[in-house]
Length: 341
Image: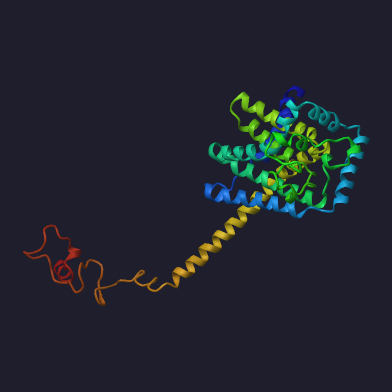
């Protein structure tokens, strides 16, 4: 018996993951998705995310205190991956420069590419994957609002961190203030470090590549991409290790909430569709002439017809010599009925 139960026990985690990442689709969710409705939705969510980051700047001294508190917690837990990685990236330009490009660019390239790939080749799974990503993004935005956190690169120099993006700013398109384009660093929220959505989005991409990639290379990329991103965000002094952990936790929370969000969206879509159809039907019913002629037997200026009549008042007998060949008695009118008697 224990041998028979072992495969079932090992398969349970995979079954739970499949249940959450592939929720049952209702009739509303099986409706075909269109790119001209998906693109504005994604742009709206990203615009909300960017605007929220700008609005949730928080107090600078409070953000610094939060960053130092994270360092104290990591020290108590004997976690110190940021310092050695940051020293390595600062000392070795051949590692630091690609890491800065990775941090500044791939966040905005790989995630949309995975979304497009899912939309085109995995349309059945796309909606759940997109909902998971968007739900997690909004949760991350709540984290930025409630817990503004100073990243390691903005702490005082005595804490031992060097901003590699400022050090290597001559190599890339970013400025010395942030990963934003030159001149735009002042309008970005540099205290949105907790949680790290760089790590969260990379984890989402990794799960999609591992789950739906058909080649070993795609599955390997699904493992490598979130791991390298986690190393990069710490080595460039943009995030603490606990920021990365929080980013993964946010994605987990979004995954758990995805079925609920999809059900709510389906109900809202069904209610809006019913409301629209009711309004459209009411307007059509009030349209001039909408009900004229429905089920009426009145034809030709008020003359009524009965069963067997081809024209109004056509009741002459057709059973005589001039009758049509093969005419049925019912076509003959009253005269044919009398002859039959």
